[in-house]
Each structure stands twice: as structure tokens, then as C-alpha cells.
Length: 331
Image (cartoon, rainbow, N blue to C red; front, side, top):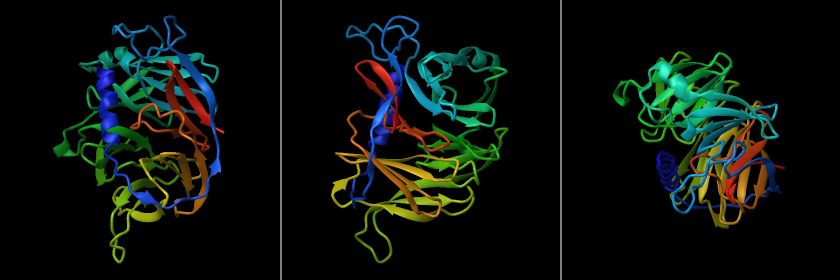
């Protein structure tokens, strides 16, 4: 039940994006191919995702996966939210490691089972956003130890609702708080450093730059202008600087988000129209480096959890099709 409510809440938030016309850009047509699959069923190799019509749950290895990280070696971390654990899977689907957050949470003094909404890597650790305790969990996958960074309250430099987590090259922690509409920045030990109003961000691990998307209805001298503007912030205490506008003139954008920054400091922007899903890759200066398009025959697993990239910029997506969770790679 918690999982369904969580997904519904994120879907509602994502639906609040306003749709406006923009201009078309030529993009290379590509397709997603299956990378890793988990089928619904009743043995240890299957996936629990959808309950039966009478409400009986299927028994399987995953229940309501909410976040994914694909590593350079092709292995994928999956936050198995409703099972309160994080699992590492190889490209052939072998479960390489399992982190039991229920046990670690009890040792760390958490009152409720963790409910993970996002994960990211920080040096050798995994950071997980826990909606149940409104905390950031720092997990060492080798020693299976955990530190808990709890919010001191929104009025005291804290956060109200974790949407996404990021880290930079100094292991600072960036909490994207959708409810407050700001980014809260912590040091590697969970100490509050500051905050900045933004949304839909990604953080670079090269120079700590942040990228964000803002909808612009009008600008000086362009009273009728309407477009999405990608902005860059060179540090959480500095002003946002516009670097590029994303416009189309033939179709409305129905969804847009930043999905990551690669090891070369390029920004990956995803947006969808009625007929295509587009991926635009920009430098931090706003230069268009790459442009891909694919027909969105399979919807995203959850609009609030969009596609993701690995450090090299390979694009991945997840969807549920015929009771099968498919992790796919754009090729």
C-alpha cells in the first residue's frame, strides 16, 4: 500500500509540469534494447510488482523498485523499496550483493523500516533517501554499516521531503526537496552548509556545478516567449546562469527533466512529446553535443523517476511490460 501511495504521489508531482509549444530539433533516431529483465512470478528469481486481481501479492525478488544506478562495469544497483533493501545485480541478472536496510536501520535506531526513494554513490558509499524517517542514509556496502543524517526541521536548515539525492567531488550531499522547492546542501558528515532554490537538478562530480531546468514564460523584450531554460550554478551559493533554451514549434513538451551529468561534465536532458522522447546533451557552456530521439512505445516506470545515465553517458530506462520489469539501454 505504501508503494502504491508513493508512486501515485510522485506521478501527481510530475503531472504538474506545464506544457507549452517549443521548436523542433533534428535528432538521431535510436531504440531501447533489453538490458536486464525480472519477470513476475513465485520463485526466488522472479519479480513482485503487480498484485493479482483479488489483491493477493505475487512473491518475488523485488517489490516496488524505486531507484537505479548502473555502474561502468555494467552492474546495476536497485533500490528495492518495499523490501527495505538495496541489491546489486550483474548484467545477466545475478544478485551479487544484498544490503538489508531493515537490519541496518534497527541498529542505527530507526523507528520504521526504511522506504527508499532515491540512491546515489558517494566515494565508496551509497547514499539513500529514506521517506519513512525523512533521513539520508549513508551505507558502506563492504562493511554493511550505516550512518543516519536526520533533518533538523525545515526551519533549521533541514528538509521536508527528499525527492532526489546527489553528491559532488567533495562528497557533499545535495538533497532535492520538491516540497520546499530548494536544494539543501550538507557536508559529507551531514552538517548543513546552505541551500538554493531550484528544481530538476543534477550535480557534476567534476567541478561541483549544478544544472537545473526552469520554465520561462516571458523575458525582457520577449513578452510572449515561452520555453524551458537550462541553467547552471557553479556553486550552491552562486546565482543560476542560463546556458541554453529548449524549444519546439510543432509539438508541446509533456514532460522534461535533467537525468544526469557524465564524467566529461555534459548535461543530459530528457523531454517527451506526444510522438517522441528526446535526449539532448549539452556542455556546461550550453553547446549542443548530441541529440537522440526514440519513439516512447514503453512509458517510463515512474515519471518522477526518469531515465538515468552511467558515468560514460550511456542512457538507461526502466518500464514494466506484461508483468516484467525491463531495464533497457538506448542503442
